[in-house]
Amino acid sequence: MDATQDDVRKLLRTFGIQADAAIQARAREAQGVPKLRLRIVVEDLTDYGGGAKAAQPPRLIEVEGEVSAGP
Image (cartoon, rainbow, N blue to C red; front, side, top):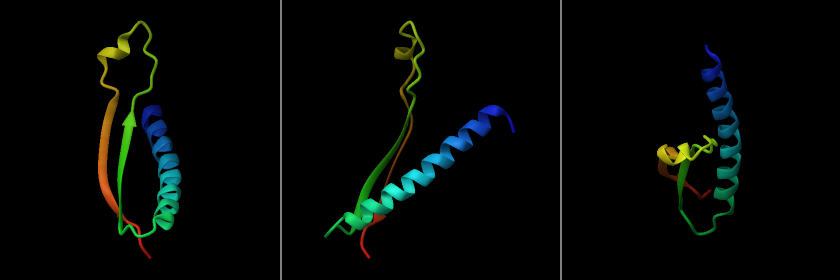
């Protein structure tokens, strides 16, 4: 496994743990809403310098879906 793949997996693992906790908490707080409609976005925040970022699309992936919010 190369360093890039290691870094990506570490980032996704951290995101997954934090996202799971946040979504679970949100679902518990949602009163009278059977489903939460959520969007997950991965966005490139890199400073490419010299305005080069303008040529790069900032969003790499965007996923939407529903999560049950009731007991």
